[in-house]
Image 1 (spheres, rainbow, N blue to C red):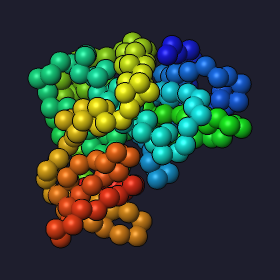
Image 2 (cartoon, rainbow, N blue to C red; image 1 turned 120 degrees about the vertical axis):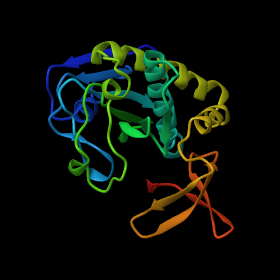
Image 3 (tube, helix red, strand yellow; image 1 turned 135 degrees about the vertical axis):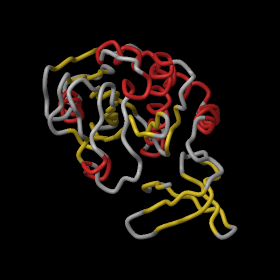
Length: 243
């Protein structure tokens, strides 16, 4: 998989730009913005994007069902993990918070948002990636979060260039996408769990209607969260995780 790169000086949302491009291209494309003014997070939240951080969206066209498309959440989180680890080394604690936030030394440095649009028999999948390279917002700017934000520079002293960083993400994404397509999800699932935050520890999973507390047991073959609560295993497809 080879990516076309679209580099913008400024845009409201790289996800929105990628979805526009989906109407006119079938090529894998990586849209990067030097400045993003209205980034989106999960559950219609805004994504704070101070200058110098990374904002980009991967666009790919895939003829697969929604369940398979959702596995790209794991492809993306592992790809960004690989890119960051390559730049900063392994001496810092880098972990993934289900399903796809990245924590560096316990601080959130990355969020990932998947969106899809149908185009006939194929789907356009857009994977928005925001990484705090140089700076981070204050905790009081972030709704419903108990995890302090951080940045790669603040935690490691390593200063990364957003454009160079996008090339590293694209390289690792191509490798992980190929892994998923050739050998399936089980091996990727194993790797992801090796890097999972709070595996085997007590967590809280909140959905719009319920709250579950239990031990983070695993993720299943479909990427669902599996927790042990009151002696029973529960599978959760989507939730906000707190610990």
